[in-house]
Image (cartoon, rainbow, N blue to C red; front, side, top):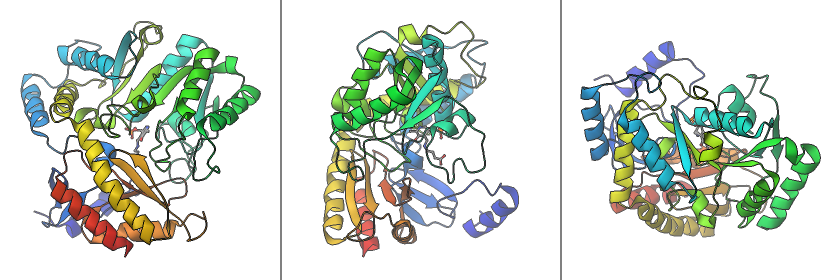
Length: 423
Ligand code: PLZ
């Protein structure tokens, strides 16, 4: 087998420079809470492929379901010749997502594609043009979703012009907004929408219940419910982007459940299918079914192998109670992170929920972001065998997203490495 170094040389000659990687080692295998490279080096996995392998890599049920499906048929296109697993995934999503009302789902390939389609559906159903998003938001890298995403580098820089009718309002970010309570922060955002856009022009309000790429920003309690209430009164479609927070990650099946918020539409991807590419929009039947026959689709959306994997992944989440596992991971990890924070003045805050936790790193005694220190701690983790990711508008948030099947031993070893990296 080629070594990581050899593969890296080939990569530089073959793969476009614009596609980056967190580590330069090349994966041989992965499972449970670890990733092993082609040279036999092992990393404890606190990334889960960016919150995708919630059920772990090559989860037994997923492997079995994919193998069986591959042998039956690989692709017919649901728009040409439909099959049961697509319908079954939609049935499950309709039942699992928050909201006791009648729902429909449609399946796609990537998170960005799900977000694009949620906007299409909201515009079609309301006949209105505008979409409201938040500071620090991340919704993808396609043209419309770049417009929805807040951060310039690396996502948007020189990739414009961007789609129109996208309006950005302040997020509730307690560490950086002086600790505004949720209702006050929501009133500030709503006033901006009403004055600058006009509620009657707004098709959709799109929000991550806990922001992902933007820095694991947890809005103050009451922020999401207040926005939900306003959207209902204003006839605006409330879209929760649960692409990173969904499928047990935060200790509930979906992060909106924490405050009892029922979105009109939810975008889903990542954790849905144990690593196979699948995404969905799930929501109110009247909105979803407003679209004319043939108005939604795509060649691969709801591919049968991905659907088989999704059914197996959701079964695994139920069987192993991975929402409870996420809460357990969050408790263990939170305690260790609090201890690190208590001994290190660079840590301004430990935040997140369940197995979606992060630390925000600043110059001691200030709120000035310190992306260099963040990168240094992350690099020390990588060198010592722990795969961590950074995020945040200011690049100063170190985030932790272990697979929800990580063992106690692996979790403990990962946290030991992390504590040592902070020194
Ligand atoms: N919405 C909330 O987190 C993907 C992107 C990493 P796709 N986040 C990881 C990167 O640098 O590209 C994401 C998300 C939220 C939408 C998306 C987009 O999902 O499957 O990457 O298109």
